[in-house]
Length: 410
Image 1 (cartoon, rainbow, N blue to C red):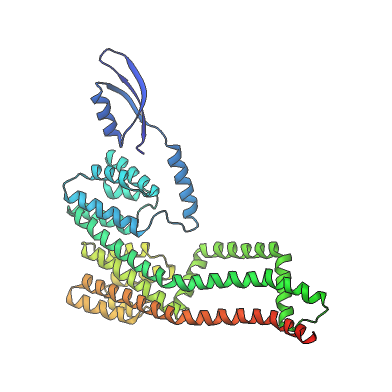
Image 2: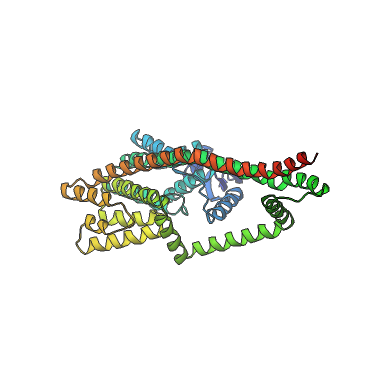
């Protein structure tokens, strides 16, 4: 919905009119009043309380890691914007059109705010930057480069490709891990139902017959009784532990240790480091291909990467470049990135095709991660089913074992 304006205007007869109207921006509101043969005396945008409430909710959710829109939404926005710019549509007009077409409320609000700032004389990059983390840093700086070079339409096309590849890569990882996560979730629910609800029913029957339970059956029964009786204390303890862990991770020291641990975990750490290498190579390639200097590109990437240990490493890498060292040698002694990346960078530096080499490296690591994750999930699926089968088998055995003794007594 377009913003609402309160206006005060005079007719040609000298009559003063105070009323409201809706328009996509201040300029359009003035044009509407002019078309009604009114002389504008005052025009003020009215606060949109629903929009302000949305902003408050989104800000609160963002503090716990929620993203109101993702790479796919940004990809569609950049692709449509690029098409409009190539067709000769002005930046402001294009944003107003996109604000009406976009279905994602948070993105729609950010586009409208951007359009309003441009109406007031701001540049597109500055307006994007003022949207309270609404747009990624790489997009803001790339738009700035596009404005300076006069190739904004090409830059938006590049950004659309960039977000599309990021989205596809994330979807591959998500799809590969969805089935194992589903199996684990269902297994936990099944075992919880059996331990908390099914087993106690049989326990009452066995107790009424004065039977002595086997050790493993007693263990399960005792566990179930403790959970049922003290579930509120257990839940409170879990919540306190989670809140404390999240609070510690939000500190600089805690986040650095957590991110370092993620890169050092067996097997998973290797996959994660390859994901970080793919992101570094993809972002650097996109920026270098658009004319951003290597030093500025690294500074920007350090703001985009969400791993503090990698951020620190990129900062050290940038410092070494300032001292006259080449990027390949600096990467070689960085334990967080695969050694192959430094060799690929060396080839790119020596041949003068660093952006293309980084693009190839990003494609290679994205394929490598997809391959490893697919193989890992292929192995995990039967392993998880076997583990679940063993646990459920033990539960069934703990029930059937006393029943077998009953049958022997009959």
